[in-house]
Image (tube, rainbow over all chains, first blue to last red; front, side, top):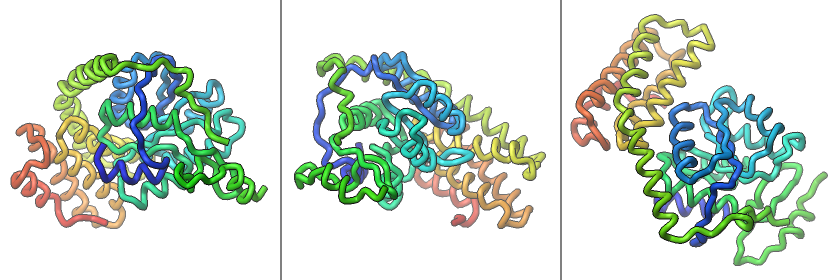
Length: 184
Length: 145
């Protein structure tokens, strides 16, 4: 992972630490991307990880039906999609109790790695932002990081997702933050 | 409340096992890369046919044109053809701003983008293409946005 991008991802989920490797073959993964090429690449990489339980959907509208039918354990979403983009999709998932996976770990794929774009993604409720081009290592490391995200999951009137202010070293109580910000 | 730690039910993987998985992934990606030039060539022809007989008022048609340009943009960098991705990104911007440009200007620019992609494919230019790549980008016209 490029140092600059590693740094902006620290903003998303705290300092990136070296995590142990895991066999991801039993994971239930769903990919939402309207690029057939990118779907093929991600599916190829997941297949190399021996993940058999994967579904791919090429438009966000159809994805909701899939989510409701069988919630995944990990969601990989592209930012740039039609008819609505990945961030709108993520916001909707985070607030849609019917989908049954409000707190699902979400990786967002994007070519936009400018800080303000990453912050925009963070504010939508994603767990990790993953820069294109996708390689095995970037995908695998980001999957592990998303599956083991230490941040509390918060739900307020303005935001639903991993705690944007959480810093492990600061010792902030997630419950205290959640309670103090809850507006409904 | 912390999010669920989904790694707790996963089997730890040794460094050697992870290397084997990575090697398998690299091998599978190389197979995709072998098809890259022909797949992109076919997508380029599709774009050229579309630009030759435009029906921009047809939403499905115009969405498909944009999607094809977006695919060309996305796949280049994955396989080391970053110049194609750059041209593809410029083409996506051009399509998004089509209504702001005179038709002749749009057509000229679209043709230049297709010609540049064709040149990169035929010459197999990887990376940014150096001075040759810069010359091709100059042919696309003044940057939009």
